[in-house]
Length: 345
Image 1 (tube, rainbow, N blue to C red):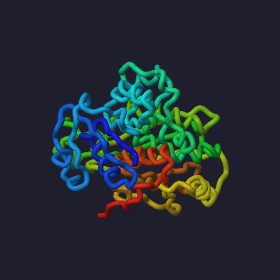
Image 2 (image 1 turned 30 degrees about the vertical axis):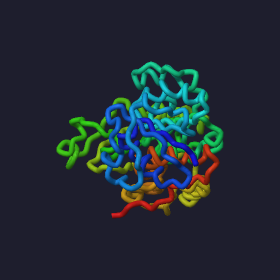
Image 3 (image 1 turned 135 degrees about the vertical axis):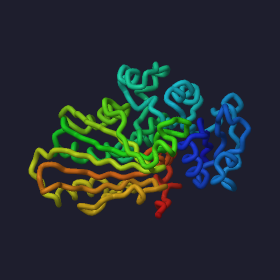
Image 4 (image 1 turned 90 degrees about the vertical axis):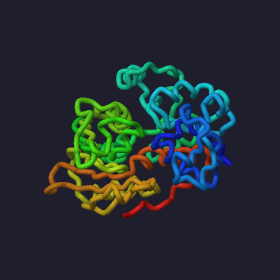
């Protein structure tokens, strides 16, 4: 059994990890930390876990995480980098759901997140945890930088086109929407029910922290310089993410060939569903499941290809992807504990 510790188990990605790992056949939940909720039974905070998780939250100084096989950090940026060195030295694998190790350029990281990086010696060691693109590296990794939710949709939507050299890499556009849970579990005016319900708005238009992460990863698959216009929006739903991606074709290609390009790219990827040409993936078709669905469109058979991408921001966009990485790191079948069907309605 894999002994698992979770740092920051009170937030939405934390409880999503608990939901998935509590029924994982190869996992033994060992420790869940929270300084504020020390001693509180997990099921008292999250009644959905009654009968499945019998642990109580523990203050960080009361648990020895070095006794775990793997520790997940479902914490704000900056926490994992402070604790990862000790854990890694003790032979514990680390999966960080925040952004501490996603960006290889230290100056770009510090400019983007406005905090100093306290473990720069680990940046090169960290593997970017997007299995569909980095599976072999993940298998041998000790430190995983779990991707952002928006970047997951953008990369899996754009990469087949960039690898094939079919589109103008300098003119990529991503129009993305996320449910309110993407902002985290916190008291903030903008995500109160009376503020976000019956409302729709863009944010981060002049620059969002997921842009440099996405551009750096996309650049790996293009010989031309990548430029991305990324505009996120907040939509009045709890969970779900939908990205509409636009790219300008630079070569002649039929619709059938475009469809085959994506089908071939993801034919062996159990959690990417390439839908029939012209389909419209819906967020509710991915709710609660570790699946990303995408579909291709080409208005008037012109030179613009549109990729529609839908996922659950808390599962394939965060905690499910982290478990997917854990399975690979420990030599398990990739879908272990993750093959549940989406909830509908």
